[in-house]
Image 1 (cartoon, rainbow, N blue to C red):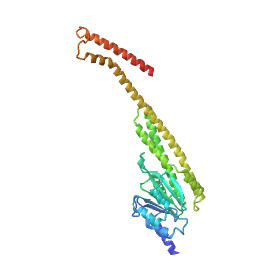
Image 2: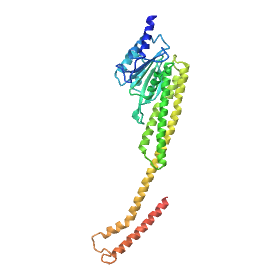
Image 3: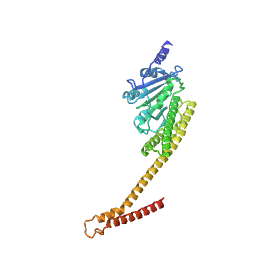
Length: 353
């Protein structure tokens, strides 16, 4: 009895260990053990390996969460050697679609979740992927760049929020991802509101290219973050045997929350499109006005240019060359033609309006 309790006592002592945001030599960024105490216990890779070897099979109410940094080359090697994950998990790391989906493989949930980086600035490079493997006793998540949603889950765990099961941890991640997406949509709406207000006040400062870049990012977010309905439908129809009915229902509700956010995102994209069209129309109008003014100036200068070109030829027979009032006669002719040209241009402009 004493020997059986000794590893759990050691795990309780690990709770005092502070896990940095970097990764240890095995590539582990952080690890937590759930089910031993009301709050999750922080563990390192050595303690996780010992628990998986000695306690995972005998403690169905407990599970661990290990989060790895794939930028560390040791991460995948450690997972391949010690984690005993499904082959599909490693396949998704290197090949296949990056769209958000949850699939069942070898009685394990494999999730591909797209998320945004910290300090998201509406750049396409600020979107990255998180891979998650969820079994009954082991949850493994891996990423190449620090992401917002997974960090929110970690902060909730550190603050003592209870997590009932490994699937509930995945559900927590999906809901945090939806919250992050809501914040992105709100920030985008504020930016679009500001652009629209300035446009209505005839003080446009944003370019069509800026709105186009924002729209492209929103389209990519919508395409990547929307869970694949076919894979999710298959999972919800045939969940793994160890998955509780409550977890299945909450997973369905968590994915349905995306539909409202994605609908708002679609509406925002249409609004940005209308603003782009309005800016394009105003630019076209300004260009047309400038061309009209240039045309008027050209037409008004046409008589004097023609007559000056003719009189400037060094040939004989130039009329009124020796007439004492020749200059004023030519000036009168030019003025007459200029007035007639101006009247014709004004008349044409009125017809166009």
